[in-house]
Image (tube, rainbow over the protein chains, first blue to last red):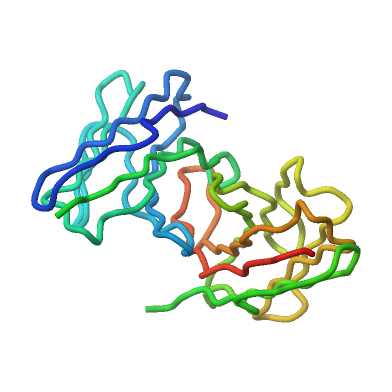
Length: 109
Length: 117
């Protein structure tokens, strides 16, 4: 199982772009990178998934460099409601993926 | 939008008692999971279930735990003899399919807060 490392916490202000980087040096060829968001007292929620290069959806973008040893979740123009814990998971299937400690993002007014 | 539901939202039990946590996964999903999260800690994988059998389980999922899909809609987690350290939020999740190609999005329920006294 690939190990991931993320910053424990980040602060930002409303309207700013937030980039959360995840390191996964031992990522395997078949592994995908998946990000989940968790609000207090709620279950995690899928945000985005990618294998290489860049993926964008209505919520976020995911940047993956060619060596795939890291990835960056980009949240454009955050609001107070984006305050949450963000998890980076790496694995080839659902049985491989494990949640780490995540990054606690606090968005301030 | 379809969602995973869990009951009860909060369960208080005494140490040594059996508890059953219930989940209704999304109807066309084939893979089911249980996770737990001790207050302030990370989300921990317990077990995955497919085609009426356990697909994968973690070291946490010992003989005290069991899972069952008693009918076409419910998915349950039983803890036979609860311990104080079983106090946690328990999340059920489901996913559309299982494939060797990529992980599928897991949809999580709102959780059941289990308090063991």
